[in-house]
Every structure is written in C-alpha cells, then in structure tokens.
Image 1 (tube, rainbow, N blue to C red):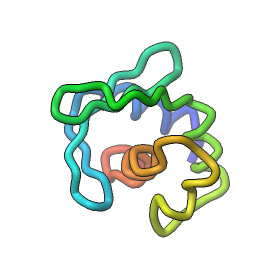
Image 2 (tube, one colour):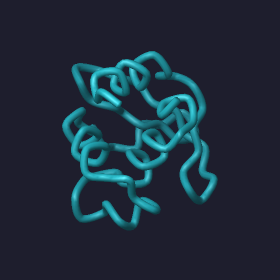
Image 3 (cartoon, rainbow, N blue to C red):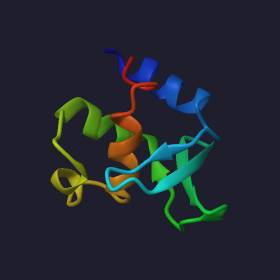
Length: 89
C-alpha cells in the first residue's frame, strides 16, 4: 500500500479515539506533518513526525510497539495508529 494513502487516512482520522496495545485510549491532532497524541485531553509531549510513520510502515510489519521502540519516539502511538483497521484498510 502506498504510504501517502496511509498518511491521508491518518490525517482524516485525527480526533477519533484510538487504543494502544495495552488498551489506553488516546486521540491525536495532525499539525505540519506531525502527529500530536493526547490522553485524557492533554498533549503527551511528543510530536511524532510523518517520517517515523513511514519508516515503521515501510520496514514492518512489527508484532508490537516494543519492536520499534529504538527506531521512533512514541512507539505505542505510532504502532497503534498504523495497526488500526481504519488506517490499514
């Protein structure tokens, strides 16, 4: 699947509820090619760049966020978004 199509789905789903692998609820905003995750309405303090999502997408699949924790910041969020059925249709 073309990464730009995946990124477009990520952008379109901003504001919706997602869940980490440990079932923690979060939402996100997309600003200037960065995903900004929020938990309980508060920014978690990590700007996750588009290129991190592309790196994980292009080199995966991965069984869970632990497999990418050395490669990207916010691996729980990156993995959860990329493995959500709304994104990987």
